[in-house]
Image (cartoon, rainbow, N blue to C red):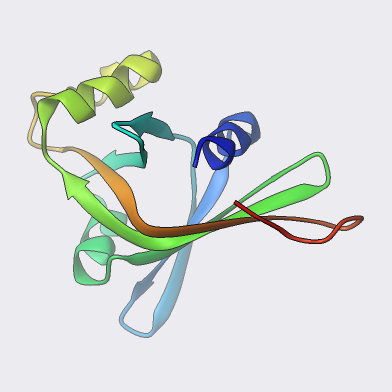
Length: 128
């Protein structure tokens, strides 16, 4: 999990895939954090992505750097604790102009049943 975190942190931007009915939806994300030994992402509860995850928590993300890419799959679980939100926002203080750990919009989610693999054009896949 820590290797997946470091890879995503270095990517800066990764792409999260959800589904809406039978339509895949993919969008760029940039937040990632480890809190209590779980990999977390962050969004806003009013966004379509939040509603999609609420309907179907199964997601996959992909990030690319230096000719390698990572795919992380699993279910996202909402964590409404202020401590988890604060930990994320402390790592991304630039988001504090839009989010606050005490508002009703900030949402942090952690991966459950997570699998992660790093791929490359010049090496075999590496399961994390």
